[in-house]
Each structure stands twice: as C-alpha cells, then as structure tokens.
Image (cartoon, rainbow over all chains, first blue to last red; front, side):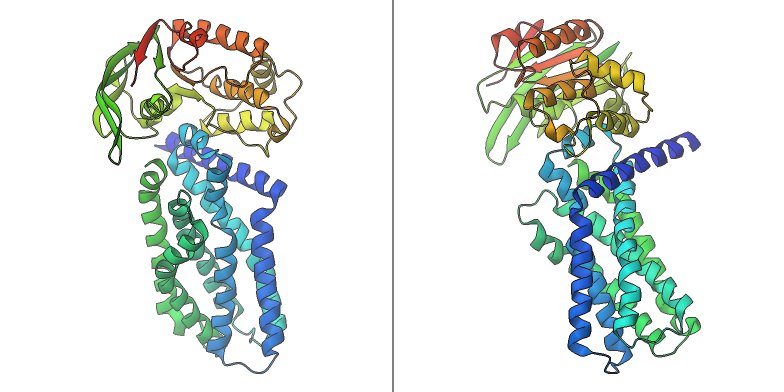
Length: 227
Length: 204
C-alpha cells in the first residue's frame, strides 16, 4: 500500500512538473488569469473608488474577481492536452489518479499565485478592512481549494466538447454556487468586523464542500478521463 | 507468456457499424497486420485493444501466464505508435522521454535516453524542442517513447508514415526484433508493412 502511494505521488508530481514547465514556456493560463484578475480589479476599483462600500458588496466583488480569474484559465489544464493531441499519449501511459492530482495541484498553484497578487491589490484599491487577517486567510485558502477542486473536474468533463468555453461556465455555475455563497457570506461577516467564532458554520461548510468535491472528483475522474 | 484475446468484438458509432464480430487470439511471438479500406475500423480496433475505448459488444482480454492483467499492468505492458498520438511540442525530446518514463513509474538516466534516441536515429537532437522537429523526426521520437517500457504488446498504426528510407529501415528492424519477444499488431494498408507481420486480420 505504501509503495502504491509513493508511486502515485511521484507520478502525480511528474504530471505537475510537466504542466508547470509547459506553462512557463507558453504562459497561456498565467497570462489569461492574471490579465483578467488584475483588469477586473482595476476597473472595479476605478468605477467605485474608495466610497465606503458595504461589507457584503465588497465580499461579493472580491469573489467575483476570483471566480472569473479561475474561469479564464483553469480549464486550460485539460483543454491544452486535447487541442495539442497529447491526451491519448497521457491516457495510455499515466494512471488516471496521478493525472487528476497533478492537474489539481497545477491549478491550485496557478490560482494561489493569482490570489497572492489580487488580494493585496484588492485591499489597496478598496477600503476593505484588514482586521481579521487570520480568519480571512483561512476562508481564502478554503476558497482557492474549493474553486480548484470544482473547476479541475469540470475542465476534464468539458475538454472533449466542441464549445468548451461556454460549457465550462454553464457547468461551473451550479457546482460553484454553494461555494460562492459560503465564501461571500463568511467574507462579508469578516469585513463587518466579526471574528472566527461567528463564521464557524461557514468554515465547516467550506471544509465539507472541499472534501466532498475532491473525493467525488477522485472517484469520478477515471470514468471522465477514460470514457 | 503474454496473450491477447478478442472475442466477438462489435463496435458501433451511433447507427454506423464499424467492427462486426471480430475474434482472434495472439500470444508472445505473434504479429498481426490489420488491413482494410479507409474508414473500415483499423484505428478503432487498435484503440479498443489499447483499452482507450470500449467495444459495443464482445470482450478483449489481456493475460500473462493465464492470469488476467488489470488496467495498470496493461498500461505498463502496451505501447502505441500512431499518427494521431502526439508528444509535447513545448518539451524537448529528452524531457518527453523523462516525463513518459516518470508517469510510468520509473526514472530514466542520460545514458538510457541517449541509447533510445540513437536507436531511432535522433542522436544529438535530444535537447531540441519537439515543436521544432520535422514530422519524420516526431515519428521517430514516438518509437523512442514506445520502447521506454520494453512493451509486451506493441501496437503500430501506419508505422512508417512520414519516415524516410532510413526511418523505414529502423522501423523494420524494430518490428523484426519485437515480434519475437512481444505481440505486435500493425494497422496498415501498405504491402511493405503488411509483410512485417506473420498473420493478417481483415476488417471491412
């Protein structure tokens, strides 16, 4: 069992390292995610200014930027394999679990990088309060994991479709609605000055969402990938 | 002794019947050419044999000494060279070999990489991006990747497409070597390629 797990880890890391290397040479997803995220943030902040927006609106704006950043680039992780015709070689050589974990980790890396840039800019451009930093970071990390967990399996599903972009957004919307609701609710409470104790229900909901989404994805991925 | 058994295999795409009641059994040391007109299902049959698709009806079984092989064992024991199987253009030939070895669960060293590249006539081209390769060089690299796992089942679809005379000679030598120690299945319409196999399966 130990040997199997170690084998899976090293194979998943090989997929991850390959995707990072390919991404650094093409920069397709990086450019798409960063340009979309930064552009949206700047446009929104110019339009609204530091005009004392209510916490709920600030929270919604932040997660809308994160959501569309994720939508603009994360599907590429599987679409690229289909468009380049490399998915067959990958399918014939690599274990589906290794592919899933490698791709999930790659998407997590991309979104985490975007988050590291977008989040400080968001606080600079808006008047969002920075008091609850630790609880906010917990929500942020769970949000990034949830977004990656959902978008990675949806990206695998839509990669063989003809109208990939539209289908990605259509399929993602109902799956991500629960996640976005929890994220906006918890973030708005934090912006409103409440502490970790007041958002424990939302945190539990986020942990459950991430756990269910990634577990279901691991179970489903081999059928999505091989069929 | 490895075996490959196709038992009453049917394949339909919607209302179109592609493969109709196909049965054969191969074992280590056997080689078979799959022939038939364009669109007759040669490549489809290879995909089914590689477990990259499912037959509409019938079964395909892999076994070693009478014991059925699971998906992971089949993946480790099979290789495909085909015009529709692409490698990564944005990686070098060496990086492609290292990656496909790594996802197969093994590490590959520089000497082995050079040996594989030399074997297919790509000596000295390992550090080049595959995107800069000609179609014939890409086809040669596919053979290097296919030989990584010393396959017990070697599937070749149009094995000499895009290759020059030297490339065709290399492929003929590889098939000659592997057909005695593996099961080799060749999908082709070229008489020269058909002659590299010992038996023929006609799909219509």
